[in-house]
Length: 169
Image (cartoon, rainbow, N blue to C red; front, side, top):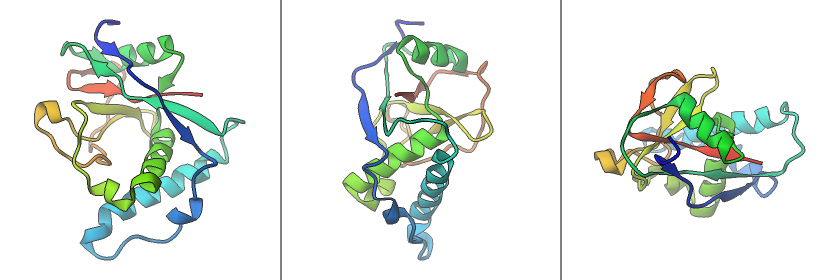
């Protein structure tokens, strides 16, 4: 499995660097802003969740590995790869805070940008199951960067078009 994924870079996410007030005002103004509003609500929920987590860290890093071949791997194998690289599968909170930082850097238009990464990202969702995010240009899916898949997956499920979003402190 180690030859199927390769980490190229880590991106620092600074929780304290977020202007949390940017996410307090609703973005809903008809269908045009529905995507922004859904992401804003998720970010607010994630910020609230952070208060209950027992961590002193104000920063963390995320990485989106690259696939070196297209052999399917399981969610469990992705989790093992993350651990072997001193991280873990990112969860919905880490994903949301990462998106919040990208929105502050690029504006709310980030929610409407087409996917640029070749593979979907796998994250741990609120219910502990896995979920796909983003699109996959390698497969012709130019969904929005902030797209959240509809389905939930188990750690035993195989993923041929996806990579883990990895987080580490």
